[in-house]
Length: 187
Image (cartoon, rainbow, N blue to C red; front, top):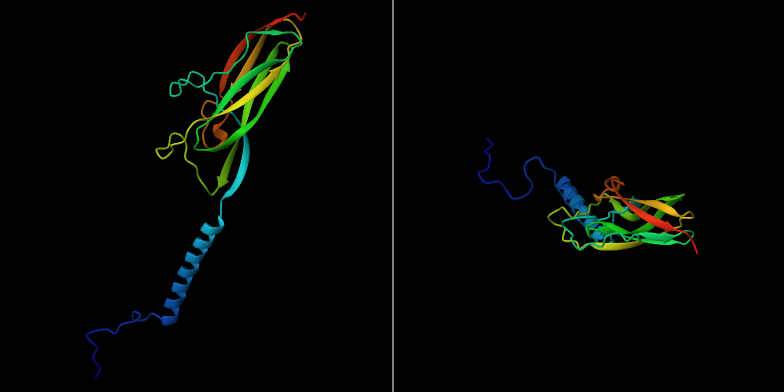
């Protein structure tokens, strides 16, 4: 006659194979080692640079002292006219200054400041609207030169981004500021 013991002996549960239990522990140990090695060696997500339209603050109530674009009221025909624009980084994105594109035709010009936004596949960054973002605003100074060959009234369109989000598609030329410049005859 067989009697079941009242107290089970210490060890693996009934039906579990001891080698299978060790195999699971080895897998967990291997995973832990992989995590530690990745942390030590810096297994960073893959970075990708994107040329995006720069964010410009014009009449932004949250940033009352932000410098406005500087566009002179007058110019001389045939003499370069310098324009200064400050784009902004919220400090919660991986952003650096890019180039400034100028397209001029006759007495019209379009100026677009660009910055470089780096995104990370598999990673994430906080944005200025996230509660965990305590970034400071960084300014990138963009200079543009326009030459108007003919005297008269010239128009400069500044195209910029107003949103400046963490994704490249958030940084479109949705903002526009128009400046009028009186071009005087040379000499």
